[in-house]
Amino acid sequence: GGRRSPHVLRKGRRRMLVRVELENREENAYNASLWLQLSRNLHFSSLVLQVQNLGCYPVQNLTLHVALPALGHGRATILSLGRVLPEDNATCTLRPPPEGTGVVPVPPEDLLGVDRLDCSNTWCQELSCHLGGLQRGEGVSVRLLRTLHNGFFSGAKFRSLRIVGSAWLGVSGGLLVLGEGAQRREV
Image (cartoon, rainbow, N blue to C red; front, top):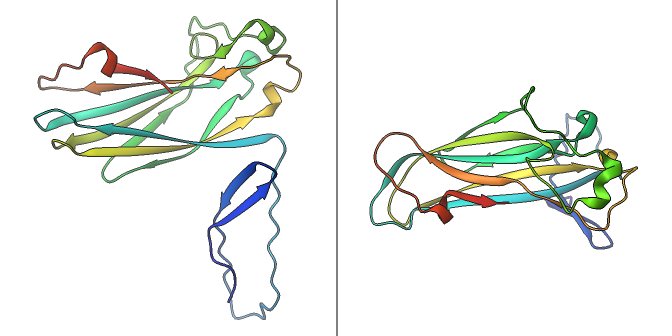
């Protein structure tokens, strides 16, 4: 018997969860090894978005929208969405950053004067997840696996920089009023 999956790979304070499956196709598989190599150019992160119906009545036709910075100056990749893992009957669609918007992405050499990258200074991709209905007290989660690409930052100078996306709920049809604070959040 081999070690169980998933494996946690560690290097210093960095950790990565890896699921490995080795299939034996009737060959001799004694002392089989699998080597994994992590590129220094990538940093992985996971984001879980949860929507819960805290109201008194069931709600229908909810859609979760998430806008995440994706491309910077010269259309260089900043952040990519590797996988979307919706719960239950949620269905998600990812749209690439639109072309021809009025957004002027900040060049890497100007990052020293910027404390955050968001949809006002990068091109963002939008994820829409149709959540269907939620009964009173019921919730649903959508997990995003993201990859941060160092290529954009390699020639940049900055002290600290936050990459900020936003999430908001939409309702189609019916009557549902969301308070201002419940409509949009930074992620």
